[in-house]
Each structure stands twice: as C-alpha cells, then as structure tokens.
Image 1 (cartoon, helix red, strand yellow):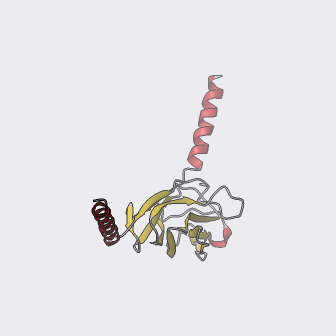
Image 2 (cartoon, rainbow, N blue to C red):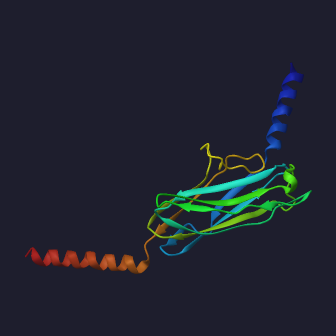
Image 3 (cartoon, rainbow, N blue to C red):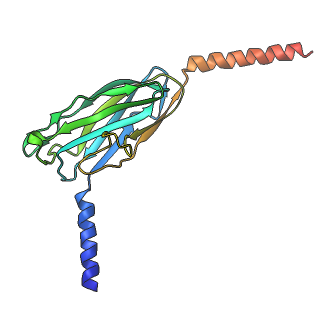
Length: 188
C-alpha cells in the first residue's frame, strides 16, 4: 500500500516536472496617457522541455489601443536555430490581437531552447482611448491559435490603465468650474 502511494506521488511529481515551462507577460508601466506607447514583454522558460514548435497570441480590446510592433528572439536548440514565423496582428475596433511568438524547431524535430530562460518577445501597442485594458493569452477557442509553449497552454495575462492627458483633465476641470460659477450667478 505504502509502495503504491509513493509510486503515485513520484508519477505525479514527474508529470508536473515534465510540463514545468513558464511564461510571464508584463507591461512597462501600469498607467499610460492617450498617445503613449505601451510595451509588453514576454519572458519564458522551457524548463528543459522539448517541443516541435511554439505559438502565442495576445488578445485585448481594440477600443483602447492600436497595434504597434512585434518582435521575437530566435530560439536556439540542440539541433540549431528555430525557424521564426511572421508575427501577425489584427484589430476590428472591438477585439484586437497580436502574435507574440511563432517558431518551429529545425527539421520539425522536438527540441529544447538553450537560450532560455529570458525575454522571448516584445509587443508594442499605442494607447488611443481612456480605459482599462486587459491582455490575455489566446486560448480555449478551437481556431488553431491557442497558446502552446513547451507544453504550457495556460499562462497569466496582464492589465494596464489609459488615462486622459493632464491638459485635457485641466480643461475639463476649468469648464466644470465655469459652469458652476454661471449656475451660481444665475440663481440669484
């Protein structure tokens, strides 16, 4: 009985270690002004796992940001440099997305990445409207674009806030003060 429990625990520990890859996504600031560039950085660790290819797409609200640029490092494995795919972006004004990484191993042979952990990619967005922007990995939609990073298929996202420019806030405040003064002067 004890031997069965130990064997089960060992099997569970081995399974958890096999898919120990990690991804983190962060923005360079928490608050942006309209017009500023938002820089999202993806850091990953394959934890010694192997894969035939890796793919990650970010989803966010197209009502608050426009797509900017995308770049990815070239993964290097035991069999050589991985082949980078084109990083596409789309935006219909409501839902926007940007690919963060898209690579296959040389010869499509399962390989590790010898240059990880580290920065995998950088995505920039342009803040266009005031609001809270939540950025998540594209997953759970059977369209072929789900997150796949050395066996990792779920990873945390990030969020940031876009606020009005200070000059706009000052003008709005002055306008409200003027309205209050006019209202008070008219009530006499």
